[in-house]
Image (cartoon, rainbow, N blue to C red; front, side):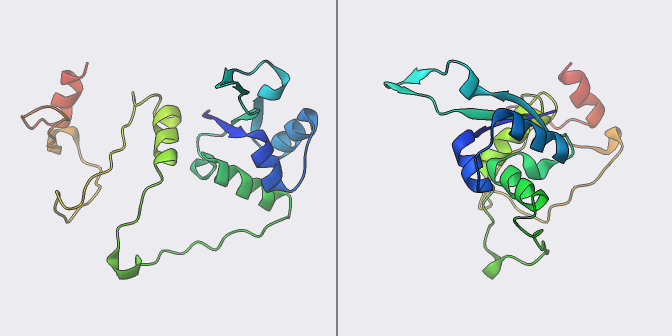
Length: 166
């Protein structure tokens, strides 16, 4: 399971109350996540003469991509506590066809956690001025995949890619 570190004071502020480590651990358990560590209980590094802020390290289930960041954790816990209503998500066209900015922090969390330091998956952001659509994501048999890997010049099938990266 991915472990996400969040600012302890910031999360408690977002939740509207302070918790003891035991109380927060119980809240996590009741919700279905796990408090892995409360760094306020140990020595924290001093950077530029100031001690690092206390963090809560929380294990998030692999199927909860919505909780891989501070905002997702605080939103879901506030909903669980009855302090907020569930969001009403809708698929809508972007205003004026504008490019939607990807949250780089979430991308990095996906790389470091679910993608296991990019050993399973790598997500890339691209300058849309340099690529041309239409784009589609399709599950294809390995022999039908044609792909030029990063820093390579020749196209490879799925099987060739696997052999190349063994």
